[in-house]
Length: 178
Image 1 (cartoon, one colour):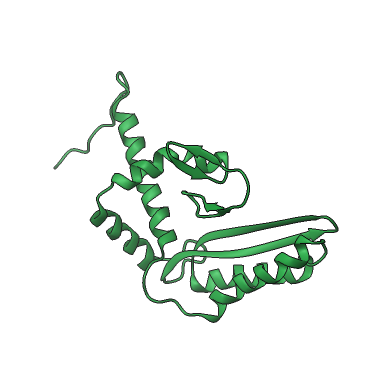
Image 2 (image 1 turned 30 degrees about the vertical axis):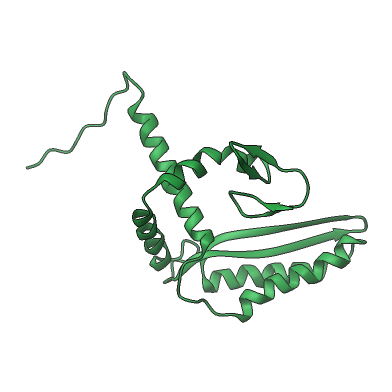
């Protein structure tokens, strides 16, 4: 059992390996290049961008930060079929609490109805939703926010390098100084 090198999801069975890293799915494996590029970025610049996002406005409600990756957990069961998932979102604490409360209600209403996984996983997901609801932020960005910002910066760098390497493409005109 390990964790996905991109989204940090626990990998119970299977997974995909790419360039020495382990991923939970093909989608995360496609991010391998960005993860590698992201590790080469200057730490000081990454930290600056992480703090800018953390202190910025919430993309969901437009309210004041701190904005961070908030994760809610869900389980839904029907007799012998049980599905559990994590839902990370970039949001302020208030929007994160709303998502966690919503998924907490979904767990309580629809999680128990499967045997054996629904009965076993529902209490786990309920507790995973309750912990952030009952605790306060420590005033620093999480490792998850660092990963998201690092991946975003790596994607911008790769796109800029791809754009520069395409010969014959018209370059955008630079604005003239008056």
